[in-house]
Length: 221
Image (cartoon, rainbow, N blue to C red):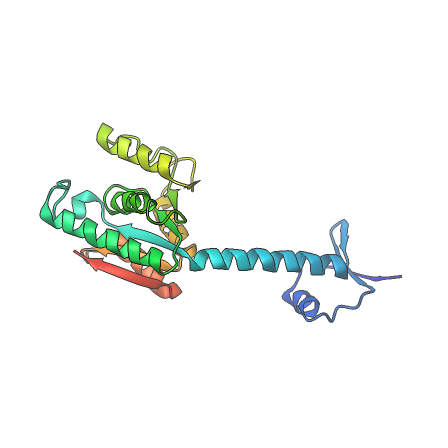
């Protein structure tokens, strides 16, 4: 007859015992109305480790973007400005170099300005790097509501060309932009940031990335 232990939540000690293969074969753990035996738990842990390893590999090859909206850029909405064209060229080169270094997944926060420039650059680079993918991390459903027709068309074009769309909230909520920024950093190992140095969402995202120890490529304007 096997021994049973009732636990509300599996303590880390049990996982340590299982991981080091020290859990007696006759010892079962009861979770509520279910019983998990040693063999079952080992299979679950193996599957979880496989999944975790896959996620970690994905993160290692993922880059994200952060940058200002047009009104915070020196050229505002004038994308014909020589400074804007120069910045776009630098951003394109940074993404191209990241792809050459093995980054295959790119995440954009889909805001106007730098997020849009970066997303369009990734889509352009797909012809040279067919293995790269673009994820659109949308902070809330209806993000482009109220935008002018030109900006909406660009937004829809990016969505159509993307490989993955992640909507983080079904409606606007206080803090949803910050949640989007944390999502970017949590799921990436490289942040490509375009900044004037001004306080705001971009500086906060750079700070979070620095605290998490991920690589930061900063493009100053």
